[in-house]
Length: 582
Image (cartoon, rainbow, N blue to C red):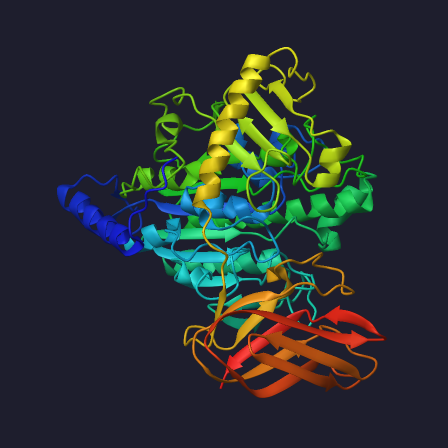
């Protein structure tokens, strides 16, 4: 749990040197490519789905959902049956890509300006790229839409992603958006693609594989489905409607069937190109099932909770490792593991240097290859509250046998349950039915002390709040979205405007600022902007969707940007602000 850090540049330099040395010594685990006859390190594909929990696959006994391609993958993979992630999206992604608990990376939430990855973090993509891998991401990023937190700034050669945490929301596109024909961001530029979002991402990923088949590649295929809004073609939803399932569940399972269909196309392409044997494919979800509690027909495997909770159904996900050249198929491992273990495992598999004092996770290669049956004893920690770790809201400690938790996601829930601490013998009670808190006080006390030690370490590790740079050559103009509001009461409701953006004006000068409502205004309204020494009062005419402020002089420095408009005597917030240096 040390926080000692190598300088980012120095570490990547060491990676390059060590990889070169291993190659010269003939120590790399390379194999012959059947098509070219050349030796190469394994390709790496991480297939991460959004809100697909442990129970949302056929190979875990779901009697409804149809996932034949994923079922086949599980049959031919090593499956980690006790694999854990964070209860929500961004923290999992931060840990997966850095091998560190998300607090260290600055990613503390999914909204409120707390989902920016610290630019100084060393990501899996950066390390693999520096070792000679082609790197690409397709789908959901959710670790910062702006420089220097974008995929292109964090080690990916190419990227096709959507803005914000999801498509079809107030913070994804000023033009309105849908899973069909969405506005996306390709290598830093807005593009419009025809088709269904998951199909688009997977088809582009296949092109990436084809283009880089003759060199090692890292593909991060991160679908935005089956995250709500529950949108999918009838072709995939109708089979579930015919089963008599509710409309919500039919669409949810339809989205998962679409994922399975696309995954099958990825596997087919690998076989066609003779790459399957030497490609590590990791399939997992980013948090537990998102199904709402009112969906009584949703299969949950008997697990308690859902996404955003630290109960099993909120943080336990399917996790399959497929590498035919190295892993024995059909093995199931019940040793606990987590998102923080993915980066060290992949680097180990590729014989690429990793600093032991940098990562919280450990390599799973001894388990995956069968060289070891168990890892040394350790605790895994999870947090669902916003910001600093806090035992009063949403935390869990999991070791191989026990799990201690406080499940409340917010202060209201915590007060309703009187801050109830729960202890479960997960090995014998995987469904969390028998609370042992009063029967095993010594175990509970030991786990709680461990959590408090970890929480204090995380608090010391959290970097300063991130300010979004504007006026740089790397990104101009800069689009700000409601996702990155600070101090926001809500991200959906438009009748509140306490939120503001933290921005860093890098260069003094004249700027054009576009304030975008995301909807047509039905009457002329008063517009206000406040930041540092700038105070602007203006108007926006009826039937407009934006107010353009020309030649606004901004002084360099960090500041808060506040802006709103008044309609019918009520404050409303702009959904987007675009700042362009002239």
